[in-house]
Image (cartoon, rainbow, N blue to C red; front, side, top):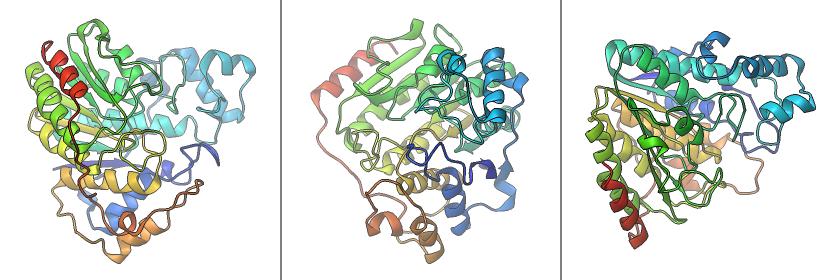
Length: 365
């Protein structure tokens, strides 16, 4: 049975009126899946909040204390801003700035315990915060949920974990967390020359990482090649006890913070293909800054994980969830984004540079 981990902490929580995370994401996915009758009580788990001691498994004690203090005070000093990256434009002070990411981590730790004990698949859409560093907030991420979750899997006795990241942005914090590891293989496909400007093809993190930066316009046909020729072989050769898929939703055409052109069918394809390569699968959220595409993509992922039939045309209750989403940006959705869940395929030519770089990485598998 697939398990969905969620929390009401995300509802109404905003990084700020003009921040890319001023939108509803996890609540929209929960509401959309409930409107489709895809979240019966037996598959739902309420995410616990990770305690500071659990966060200190990777994050520094001083940083965790500073994050808690910033939430209590509602402000930070110039020294804390400089030292820990709190109170910046990317990682602002807001009312749930400790409780929200700590809940995402709590969901990841619960997911690790569930799959370690029972196997199977768990979806934690609030997770996937892959940029946070040991003592510093970075890239909208205050705590590094994937690192803490994978470390917990290893502590629970798993020998090898494959981390696959298909967010439009390179997961620099996760790569840092497992550089040189023989127990964790980090595979990332991300837009080239995009923040945080890490994850070059040659970057191997002491042998632990496979990085594939892809050009703007990366399409479904190119993703299929990368999945079949690089991601799946690299995972299969590692023989993992568990796979963690960071399923960021910002690589689709409509996202404002990337220039990739995938449909959400690529993400569903990745979920479907990876599921058979290990007895345990954890899927998290990640990036995604268009409220309609995020809600549709992560709901489609849950449909794949839980074996739901996706309707060609959404019922009125599901449409109502999408129609009430708001966005500070001027762009508004067309009817397709309000009435369907699965995108039409966005296929195209496969460029030589992608074939070449995939071949380079295959030599390391």
